[in-house]
Image (tube, rainbow, N blue to C red; front, side):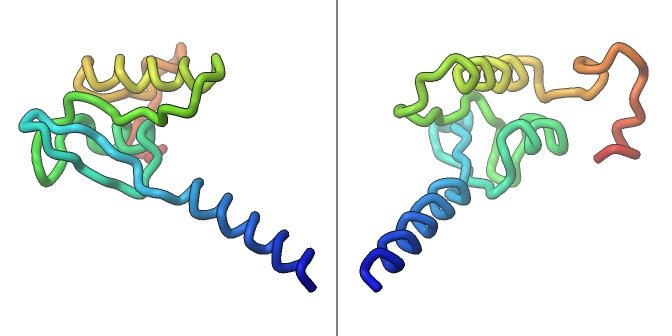
Length: 100
């Protein structure tokens, strides 16, 4: 029984970690939380939020692997560019309204 509880606790902890809100920093220094992935948010809404203009993404201090760091850099580039566009990823023209 204890082993089962231990496994369930680990699953719940992992679920909570994956589903914690993503945090953007706004121009006035306040924070904006969203359940959306940061890249998905930038594709859909650009750098504008109901609370203000996004200027940075709050990174996870524990993440140091190269892939995660590359995603963080891409998020930073998207913020600097005013949002992300699918046409920047694909060589061909993409109807972003149809995809998103």
